[in-house]
Length: 581
Ligand code: SRM
Ligand code: SF4
Image (cartoon, rainbow, N blue to C red; front, side, top):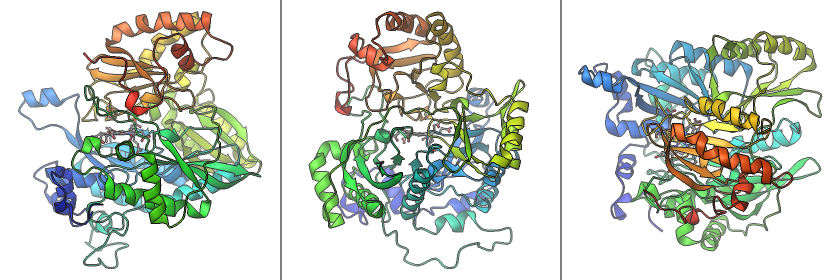
């Protein structure tokens, strides 16, 4: 075991480890940088630390080249990711976030693949006010990014309100337990105009991070709670997953999964997406303890030299699941229980109205790629704002970038229905099965890592594919399709039945054969296909699917049976059977 408080023991530590170690528990010089109005950026080391505060420095890539030619610095701004455990927020919080998007960001409100809000385009001088106002709304951005536990996902289940309440409470407990203890966030962001610190009584010196230590985790860490039969949180893509075991409409415990993750790099076979392994079972009372001990095991054994190899999935691959279980049980002081069986039947969302056992109604809306925007012919953002003004229940962000208007009381149901109709939201899910099961990451113009378009291109590609699907009679067939602008996997592409992963502008790797329930990886079918080739590549496969599929056979299962790609469940087999160009 390495001493995580003494990173100097480790040979060849990655640069980020040094930055964290010297950061004074995530302070760095962020506070000073915010006061420097001679530049729109933070200094480089602080841009790494700001991630732990939920903030990414970016620049508008659409204008990068022109500005460079004109001798101007890039159009810098910041992205703020708001932590929303389990994705549940009140109508008041929705209204606050909506207002902040207009007042301080670029007017786009993004629902992410991990049930959070993102605000893009915040300029440096507005950053502090924005973060303070998010906190005023009883939300925060702390640990939304960075080498710590991120937003804890939870199935937003509109079907069983009691089960949802249990699962949500658990997501909140885990989130609270694993939130960094540093007061840096409060000191930097929650200082009012008079320099008075709000919610900050004292800063212990020396400060301690009881769970993380001063160098935090080797890499990001993600947790999701799934409630079968829905695997909408893609539990197997998380570092740590809890699958609810339900008896008599109550959660009696959780099957634990570990070592999932999507990220990889093109051309680097040693990096790969991986589905989580089943580790064991624990009771609800044990969950936060189990989460803590798994986190500290990864803290102490994760790779701090190579950030491409630093996720829990590689720790488990390298050391083995049996070793990992033993280490976690040693720390717990008790053995984990025997994993319980579970069965999932989908990883997407179920749209439309549903009534629960308390007589409340829930409406799941399709929000294309999580982009809450007003278009000339579809005033979605305005409509949701008007609904939030009258709604007396809550909103639930789904892990598929969609939105549930939840707990609509009988008294409000008609009023909300009128607003839905006025803003063309009634038929939000009147789309093909392909579109309804699609996701794309942000990519251009804000993501600094994007190699190709994603959320700005996938809707058009689906429109093109739709004409083929309609012609073939596949209009209503649910097929999961996901697109990312680079191989990092932010829309969890490697478990989609069809995935497009950006290689370079206008070119995508096409992967086929992911499991409809999120339980199987897909595999590379076409390397670096040009946009204009995509329909021609997929059409013959869809034609065969229509004529040759077995009764009820999913597209992802068919492409394996038909021999287009090999079945892939193990991450280390992901790159088998094909050669990179
Ligand atoms: Fe992600 C980095 C956006 C979910 C794997 N992700 C990024 C950054 C911050 C780019 C950067 O580092 O400069 C992207 C910001 C783009 C922008 O302008 O908004 C970004 N990731 C997103 C979001 C917003 C995609 C979306 O359209 O919804 C999702 C925000 C989730 C949240 O609210 O917390 C998002 N990212 C994911 C997921 C899906 C998930 O967690 O279920 C993954 C794959 C799962 C996983 O972590 O293995 C994911 N993002 C990555 C990676 C690759 C990590 C790896 O292990 O290799 C990076 C790059 C990195 O960390 O170096 C990354
Ligand atoms: Fe950016 Fe790549 Fe993530 Fe898409 S997958 S948001 S392009 S890092």
